[in-house]
Image (tube, rainbow, N blue to C red; front, side, top):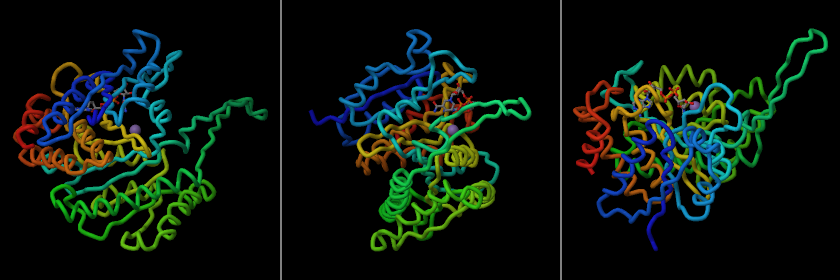
Length: 363
Ligand code: NAD
Ligand code: MN
């Protein structure tokens, strides 16, 4: 059939509340595509029941039968549990989802550390850096004390494809701003890519990342001449992001820096409950809210579904269904701007279901 097949993996905690919420919004899109949803297991609770956090059948169904997926959240324990490893990390690897794309947009009604408007897109490399988890421990023969080492991998191949995605997304965002000013509201300059690194200290690894991303622009001057390029050392990136978040459009970073600055950026917009992400590869996309399983509020019906709804929008956007994605973003933005139906994380008294109903009304 011509239906779009989406794997739904709610996993743990509020994942089970916000993924069905996002599904309802997808199903209600006016003149929307026909969806075929496939419900799939994964997560810590599944591990506790069955001994596996990511069944092979989930991976196979996603690979062989689905066009994209929507993931909720996992409750990863902080202590080591024998036989357990995070299913989300494994899925990114199995499906070669090499970019983690995180738009961070201010919410006017939220209480935040500063009231500046931001509308930035963080693009985090998703496959290498310190996350190759090549760690070892030795004993220092002199002191007799332990020494731990980790390898950090930065490849020209991965840096080049993440760089290309950053420049392409800068152009796409500009196009969307021209078409539909509400979707990307605050950036008023020429498109810009900011490269985050620390090549003053790590001149070999971060140096390669920096040079490779810079070379992407130089390799195609015709296409990218309208995109400004600048760079920021990761520590001063954090400082500037908190003081002048409006100075950033597209930000591209190696895996660990991208992880850290995107959680910091989420703090600037008032709640984790509104920040979406997409894990993007060349042939598969998986939407995923940035937040975790929120055990403190799970089961109460008050989780903010906006991050998951926006993640479903990102899924459609990166599958090429841009008009439907924009309709979802606009409906969410209208609910946030109106501010009469908000969940407690944004200072409101409404439920998950109330917010979904409000979004459906604006669609
Ligand atoms: P968390 O994101 O689950 O929660 C942090 C705080 O934000 C909590 O107070 C929570 O109530 C609130 N919050 C988060 N999402 C919300 C939403 N949609 N609506 C309203 N409030 C929301 O982070 P945590 O508490 O550090 O971790 C809890 C569990 O989630 C841990 O087991 C952790 O390993 C896991 N986790 C998973 C992911 C993921 O699946 N990608 C990400 C982060 C944490
Ligand atoms: Mn993180």
